[in-house]
Length: 559
Image 1 (cartoon, one colour):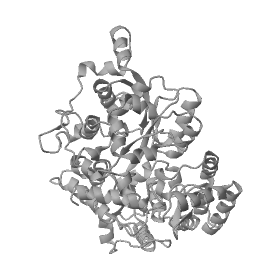
Image 2 (cartoon, rainbow, N blue to C red):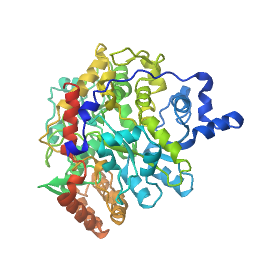
Image 3 (cartoon, rainbow, N blue to C red):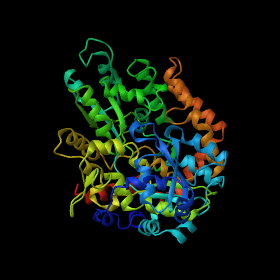
Image 4 (tube, one colour):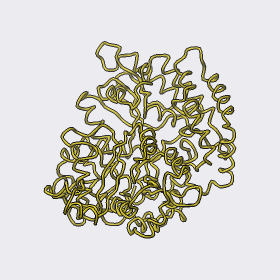
């Protein structure tokens, strides 16, 4: 699999980073963003134009405008080959927003979206167009990427054999971090928990023994909303769509889901988590509680160390200067021990509206957004404004505060088609952190530690990254989609009921979930996945392949 899917990975990752990105000309940045009349309309006609989605996370500083109109979008329109109008899509409601846009006939030409469960139904409904002809006729950059990495074509091809999705090659590293307040451990004379029973005992002590020393019972032992809840699921070996490998067979992980539900129920019933965790849909309250020193065990994305440093570590140290944290391995559970899920190494991120009027313009933009110039600008900002480059050295961010204000809110989302590690070691996650700065060095060390926790003898949740799961036939996908709200991993109504209801056990929830699943025809889904794994699993990227890419990328960095 490694030789077939990922040729020249290590070689490509050694390519020297280019150093030619410049800041946009202030006098002309608006020109690319708007198609007017006269000379401007003529320019737009020559350049081509398209609409594209951009995630709206509600995090853009007021000084920078809106997610669809800011310095990044102006640079894209100034430096790029086509005019792009960005359409904001709320990050936590992308499925609803896209469905509304398609239903009203106003869906953008280019849709940038991670979730296969959102994109696959649109492919089945013929709402998206195949892209083979666009690449053949108009592409240079992306066409070359496909030749280097056949896995991009394999992962982006639909059930009908046609290519539908654009993608990228990512740095594959553990995606999540399990963080714990080590100063609280020291104060209460506790050890790093190695099992979920020990994790529970530590959470209990953090809740009940006044670890912050303020004489009040105002701390939570552990977070359980949003990312923290997802990590608990992964800790017990399950993630969407809820299937696990057992005895070399792919089966529905009912016992694993029951086990994590029982653990969450114990935490909830004993008051070790925020009783209102379920209403904290995007985890913002838990984040603030953690940053204000009120949560002892916290789980979050940890695949971009600079983001964690900027958005979490700095704020925690500002609010609670004496706080000390570290990252720890996932503890052993009653159903086994698992590694953190990994960043998807071959990630499909872009699809094209079947009604797109200018496929050439879409392809030109994809080529631009896949280029090293684009990626370098998103990563380091404008040359001479946010950073500087010297021959033979990695670019250096010279004004970090300015970069944080003007790029941090959206650089990752605008760069969903960029493959940073292919441009050299300067674009691996830790390179942006300065080891001479004590705070940045601490985050850098935690990030490195998180990778050293990987045990290649252990599995991750599911047989592969959720985005790499094989595409179900549309009638079976409909069964899975329609039952997710009721029995899905994490927030399925039946499991939530077991967590919140004193006399409703996790075992009873499992029985009720099984009954609801089978009534909806779920056995057909079970049988299809089981058969696929037995006969065709080598057609997809599996955990073992992700481990191999991880090893290769670590070797490139001499780690």
